[in-house]
Picture 1 (cartoon, each protein chain N blue to C red):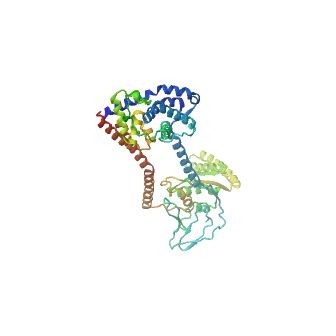
Picture 2 (picture 1 turned 180 degrees about the horizontal axis):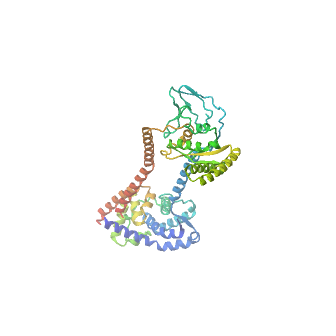
Picture 3 (picture 1 turned 135 degrees about the vertical axis):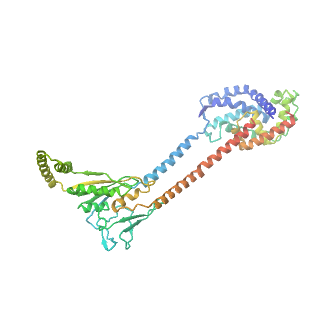
Length: 164
Length: 338
């Protein structure tokens, strides 16, 4: 089956945007990464060959992950939970400051950040980026059974902390 | 847990909606490159399966065709002794003018003993083939027990044998004197009746049809003459008989031999295991395997196919079944978390 790139762009841009945004927490940086990801995807589109289990979405997110590896400030140890998010003067451009106008949302994101890398990745891909299990399995290189265990564990941790 | 999931989903939606503005801006920038671009998004499982299936089928077809026996036409020379093999039967020595390895690769070895019946044993190479005992009866005991003997005993001979193998009919063509034709035909039918694997169809070629019909007519007229009591009619029939006999005599001078084609077909072989033996049977007679031998052969065949089925199950069905089970288990596990 063939699809227009435009349709795929419209389908995956919101997902990619949410994923990258949560990872970098900076609007401008997130937009740069998303732009770079789609530009590289267009450059390498001829190299994309769907195999069993591999989809355009998983391929796109792999490109984004590679971009994130280059961009994320490794020396930055501050998490979202630790920044002053309600103070406008802090103004680090964090979209989350703008978005998270409710304490409950902030709490949720804090708990996500407290998860280990793999759990955070899976939770972000599944619930924030709304990716399919097939794509998540390909991106994280984990089997669906393993994903189920990771997700369940992560949800329990979040639920215990925020009592939801 | 459900509430946690819902909360996360709601948060995700908010974040995704936030990118709408950037989505439009980036779209405008990249529209020139994106609008004509198409992407293959799915992997066709059918295509590799079709190609694999076609390849397997091609290999099977190749194996079958290479196993087909080539047409074997053997010029038969009854007058020449091709082999000096002799076999001993009883008190006498019987040599066969027509002993000839007519089927390449099936050169029989012979044993001899003091019995009247001389046994030939042939071994074939697959597990389905069993050794076949071929009996050649001596001329003293049953001169008409074989097709070959049948021809020669009537003063005829076999001219060619067509053996296509693979269960196809075998055709034996020979000559018999025209005046012996009907008796020859009767004897052949008796021979065929005694062999459950053999059928015959006689196709008398190059025979002047009138010769056959005249003979039959002559017999018919003779019968009528014997039965009729009306003298007038009897006279007419006798006149007719004379005319027929004159015609028949005139034909005799022109027709010396009748070409007879005999088709040997396997009537009900067991799983096709008998097809390679019909030619030998046609030539030398056949000793039907007994019930026990036949039953053993059936058991071997059943075991063979059972093993084949097990192989298919092991290499194909079981992996497919395991794959389906794992897939189902994974889907069930993930569905809980949706």
